[in-house]
Length: 194
Ligand code: APR
Image 1 (cartoon, rainbow, N blue to C red):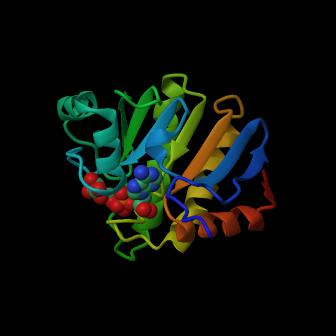
Image 2 (image 1 turned 90 degrees about the horizontal axis):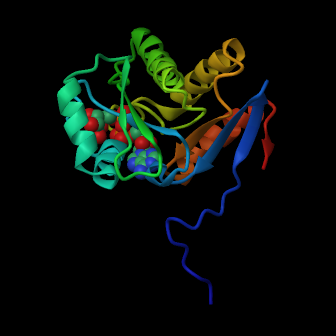
């Protein structure tokens, strides 16, 4: 009898791409379980927590993350702030605020900025591995087929300009459909399966 697959049974292979000394990777999974130095949260301007990946990170990380966010107060769209990781395996959580999709050209600039600012916050504390969710493509409505190349272009440019900063930059996609968009985008750029 066929076994039903639980959500955590990851049957899809990860895919990787080397940019100098930095390994870019994409996999399907739950970012709250990542063993990396820093995970990125798709937050809101008020850092108030919410649903989606934000709710999952605050829930798994415990009250210290919420308390630190309250102390910081706000984070403008396209920027990122950092807190500790609380009970998470990751030492740091970077709270990045992506744009609410409007269809205007400013969306792409703000989305790229949210990824770049996250990498800056992580490198400032010496984190050498980082995991991103797909910022803005849930509640904020950014079409993932448009968002994925912006995410990849931005981290690639950062890794080329800062070759010693990161060993690993990983994208963690929560659904098979989202992962397949990243898989296609990685493949288009010459990536190979792990
Ligand atoms: N791990 C990885 N990705 C996840 C997880 C998880 N545990 N949970 C959800 N996601 C995915 C969603 O499937 C989506 O593809 O994260 C992506 C981003 O979706 P949202 O969390 O809705 O983030 P965003 O679109 O940026 O909207 C931000 O939503 O939760 C609120 O407070 C948040 O107001 C803010 C807004």
